[in-house]
Image (tube, rainbow, N blue to C red; front, side, top):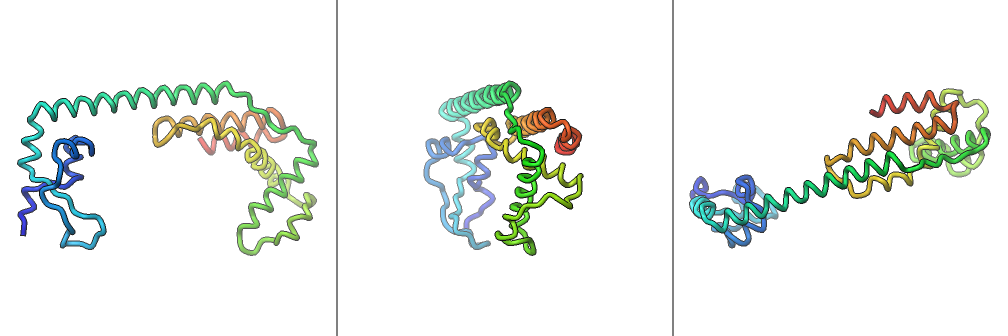
Length: 205
């Protein structure tokens, strides 16, 4: 059996700073390729002779490819930072238009929205019962929460402002800023809901 201590896996090569393109162009075909006899896996094992990897790492070709990879990574980082800044600016300046509804209509829609969400859970009223929306008897605190939730749902279109942000590059910061702006807009449009909006801003960061 091959002495595996003299070989490095594709993951190991990547850990040494190689990109897949560098592996393809500078190393080419793996020195050992096949199934790992120690465990079942659909993915073939690809092993590279460590001595060959180290020899290539000492060549000018490797140095040039590594420098190009670093430059591309840096450019990607610059683009991501610019995109993050642009998205944050857009979120800060975008006018938030909250639907203005008469109190009874907002309450009716909020209760219906709540029932529609609850309909996904076992033991909740069926579609026929959902049509008969009644606000009477709903605790005031619950009704306030449901109204804020409904209005937050009605403003979901503003989530498109986050387009283009992925992973950790400013995504969390942008989401928190957007949530705060939406809740602040709801609280400004409906002062009776402002306290609940402030509570959510604090709770959701």
